Length: 465
Image 1: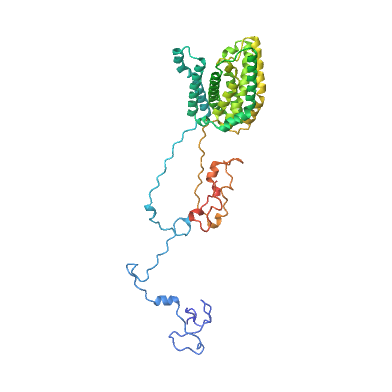
Image 2 (image 1 turned 180 degrees about the horizontal axis):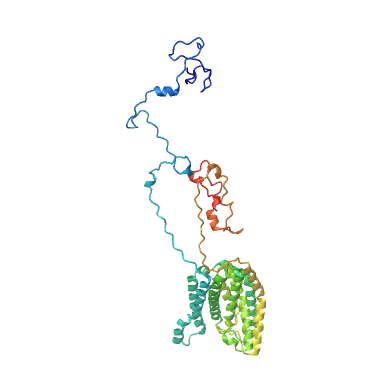
């Protein structure tokens, strides 16, 4: 007895099929006439399994391309790696074999940055060379021409000092200071204009006193004017290249990391500049010592003006021009008399010594507005301030690790690089070149998630940071 629905063989006397649950209609095995009870039922239909067993299997051709219906490729076997589950392992392709091998690009070898102490030592060595070496080529000139004019000799000396100072600054890496800028000289006039006006007033006072004494003006005053202006400008430029270009920037290299260190560099450079205007002979007596100390204080406080110009604009040539112009305005008496570079800042005569002390104090008082403006400009400088000779190593670009691709649905939920805090984030108001280089593109530049390539769906894992 067989089921009329599924064709399975049933036990004798069964009323329902135990396979499909259909009511049983008895059908004879020999396929005879239907009995009276099953007269209205159809004969059982053969199952698909029976049809496949009875259907003949066609013979396959040896060449699958010549057959009528080649068999499909068998399913790939699951990988033996338990971490990959039952996903099939893709068959290796031969497309990559034709690509050329990638050769790593050789990276240029970076020099080790110079330390601040080494920079300071090299700067002072260069300053010593600038001070002492120019005398060597001038000795033969002095021996060959003993009657050479003192002004011409001084001009040659300062020209050699300027050349040596420029060479030292270039070798130490500060050639950017040697380019004069209009804004540099304008800033010098802005904060030091009061000092220049005071120099003009003092010069006019000296000129009136000279004329009131009955002295006559030299007939060669146009030539004296040109020679005085040239010599004072050379003196100003050479002193600025030496004291601000070499010594001050050398002091900033190790001391400019903190604000106190920056102030110490400014104070030390001012003291060095002040003591450069006196000699050992000026400390032979108490009267000379007082004059020398007052002169050191006056010159040191005035030197804050070119220091502020250099720190604000990075232009040492403009500071030198301002220095030379100030010296020229104090040397008007050289125009009406024979010009001379030799200036005595102290005197052993009691009356002259007292007059010099009061003159230095008066100059310091009238310079106070410009000195105050220079101090405010120095205090506004950001820290660290290591000067033009500082050599900082190049910023290291962080390389993110490669992580597995995320599904396209998770890509939109991953925070961008701008939303994640970084350890080297720049303060507000300042641009960080490293973060700008690694920043993600804007939303309107990024491709849509549906049109993105498979490589675009692999963002950095935020947990790897």
